[in-house]
Image (tube, rainbow over all chains, first blue to last red; front, side):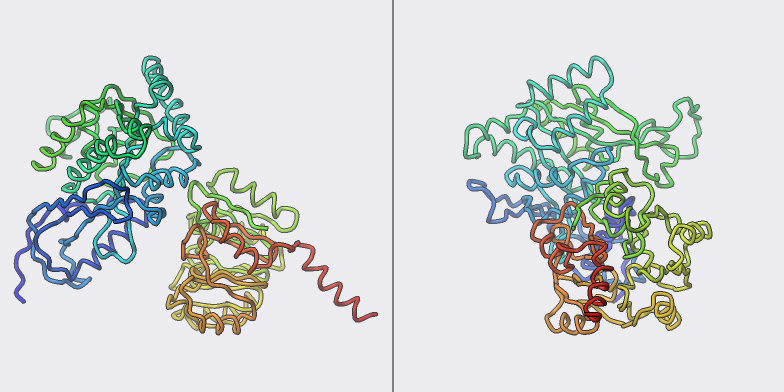
Length: 329
Length: 245
C-alpha cells in the first residue's frame, strides 16, 4: 500500500506527560489495540449500560470528526497517529481500580481514604461518567468525572478528610469564612466537581464530557426516585480542586524576545480550569507538599494546587466557552 | 495473622517491601504508619531494614530472597549493598548479580526450598540462585505469564497464584513446590499477587483494599491463623522429643 502523507491530528501532539506507569501502559494498550482499526466516522458515542437507573434516556452523541486513514503500522514504524474510539459509560463497581489510579493525585495529603472516595463515585451511576476505549480488554479508564453533593455524603470518611484538607489549605481570612459556610450550612447546595484524566486525552472529548455531566445533573433533579435525592442535585455551587503550573520566580524579568514561547505566569494542566478560574466566585492557590518531576518544557514552573468555587448559574457560560476554546485550538 | 496497610495511598505492599523468614526490607520514604505496622509485627523476631535499591523505592520487585540469601540487581549501588550486608544477619548471603532482567522480584519467586523463575533467565543467574538461596530452581510460567515473580507468592506453608491458572497448572506447580496452592486475587480483584501481598511463614501483609473473602483465603492457604514465629522452632523440638520417648 502506498504511504500517504499523514496529517498530524490533535491526537499526536501530546506525548504522554504522565507520571504514572499505569497511564503510560494504558496509552500503550490504546495504541496497540487501535493499530488495525480502519474506522471512519464517529469518534465518540455515548452508550448507557442497561443496568443504570430507571428513567434515563439513552443518548447517542455522534460527533463527526475528521479521522485520518492510517495504515496498520508496525510498532517499529509508529508514526504518531492513532485512531481511537472513546466511549462514555456510567460508573460501575468494576471500574474501581482504574478510577482509584486516576484519583491518586487528587489531594496532596499523604494518606486519606482514597478507596472510599472511589467507591462514592462508583456508587453514583446516575451522575458521573467514565471514559473507556472501545473493545479494550484491559478495561482501562481514561477519564472520570462526577459531581458529589457534600451534604449527602458528609458522614463518609473521605469527605470529612477532603473538608479538613480544604480548611487547612484556605488560609486567607475572607476565603475562610466563605469556605466555612460552604462546607457547613450551605453544604446541601454544594457539589464537589471531580474530573481526572490521563494527560494525553484528546481535548475534543471535553465538551461532550462536561455536557454529559451537567445534563445528568439536571436530569437527576427530575428523575431521582426520592425527593431528597432530587434536591441533592440542585447545586448552587460547584467546588473544584485542581492543579496548575506557576512560574517559579515571579521576580523573573520577562524579556521581550523570550526564547521559550509563552512565558506565561500560569499554565493550566486542564484547559477547562482556565475557564472555571475566570468565572469563579473565588479561588485559592496553595503550594503542594509533594512535587512531581516536571517535564522538560515546564522546568521553570512549579505545580500548585487550586481550589475554586463556581456558581451553578455560570455553568452554561462555561459549557459554551469550553466548546469555543476546544474548537479553535 | 494478616495485616492490611498502605504505602502512600497505594495498596501495592509487595512492591515496597520484601519479607522472608530471616529479615524484612522496607522502602524509605513511606509514612511512619507503614514502618510501624511492620515493626510491631516483626521487630521482636527479625530485623526490619529500611533501604532503597538503585535509588528507587520499588525494592520488593527488584530483589529476591529467602532466609538463606538475598539477590540484588546490578543497579544496586555500592552503598546500598554495604548497608544491606551490615544490617542483615550474617547467615544471610547478600549477592549482587549481573542479569539483564534486573527486576529480580518479578522474575523469581521463591521460598526456602524451591524457586520458580522467568523462562529467559541466564544460565549463570540460575546457578547463582541455586547457590546463594540454596534452592531448587524451576523455569515456569503461570497462567501463561512469564513474570512468575509477579503473579504468584508462596511461603514454606502454601501459595497464592494468578486467578486464571488452570487446574492442571495448579497441580503441576503444587507438585513442584510441595506446598498447597490456591488461585486467587488480592487487593479487591488485582491479579498481580506478589505486588499486593508479602508473606513469610507466620505473617503476611497485604493492601488495605483486600476484601474479607480474599483475606480468609490468604489466611487459610498460608496457614497463618495458628502460626507463631516460635512455633517453627517448637515444631522441630516436639518431633525430637517424640523420638526420645
